[in-house]
Image (cartoon, rainbow, N blue to C red; front, side, top):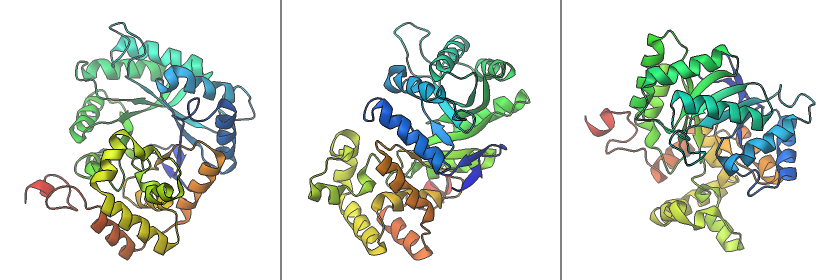
Length: 326
């Protein structure tokens, strides 16, 4: 397994991140535990979850796995999230000091641990001042309940706001940003990735295969295998870029590689990316993802991928503001 530092922090994490959103819904608890055991066998130490996955059931599955002992918790860099509603009352969501405190305590109980390695804001809270957020987070860190903090779904200017507010408090601030980022959704390249690099944040891409569209959806359709890309947002993206997806799958076939692994390998090759989140439902899917770590895409292949899925902005391949200015 390859490891890297999480942003500018001293924390070492695996370059593949085990996502747990399927645990308890599309993967049974027994299968989820088996996948986590296999992840440790292969050196994957970075696990990502959220307090709202499975309405809390996913964190409970992790907690029961940690409770089995055997060094499971000590070997895991555990990331969870706060922001989304966990109830119907006014203070059951957001990033108020009250909700942060309550949500953290509930996550710790479900996870059966006394600390969280990386506590991530699941979304920006436009109604809570940064002074309140960082004050609440600093208390959690002083209490030893959280070690590092991260963001998710932030714009570049939100990252700047957060870091400058943290700087004014002489606080470490964010060490990571979890953002949608893949070959079909490259908007993060305009401002999120440049901001993350400037402030020393590691970028953790979620939906690295765009909901399964980049996992070989056309081949799966021919084989009669159902895929998530057949519904909702992902279906629309597939319909809009079907030609590019077809050419992508042909390119992967010419490389002799599975499309899913090429998509992950492309992300691993991007400057500032810590590691993409994989969300296996089976051990076989997890094992297959490991191949991405062994793939090196040459300049010619990277250029072809840019042709199929161009960088965002009319001027392409430029960060903001050059991408849409001059």
